[in-house]
Amino acid sequence: MYAAQTTAANPQLTISTSSLSFGSVTVNTSTIQTVILTSSGTSAVTVNSASITGAGFTIVGGSLPVTLNPNQSVTLQVQFKPTAAGAVAGQLTINS
Image (cartoon, rainbow, N blue to C red; front, side, top):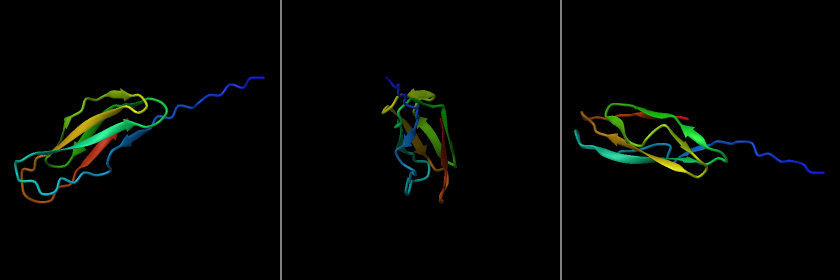
């Protein structure tokens, strides 16, 4: 007797960091940090979009949407260019 085995699809997205710290940045000067998104499951995952909030933060690199097969990655670049002195917080949201 033969028993067929199936592997359930398990898409999983791993993000290289849970936070970014830009430290002290001179007003009107930009700095960029990288976030790597990796398909770490057993099936493909689609990253539909990314958005960012917070004064001075923008996503300047990375092409979305993208479908990542297991172990494939895509790199996003986050830029911080403050326009005034003071502490700033932002939030990066990834939709998959």
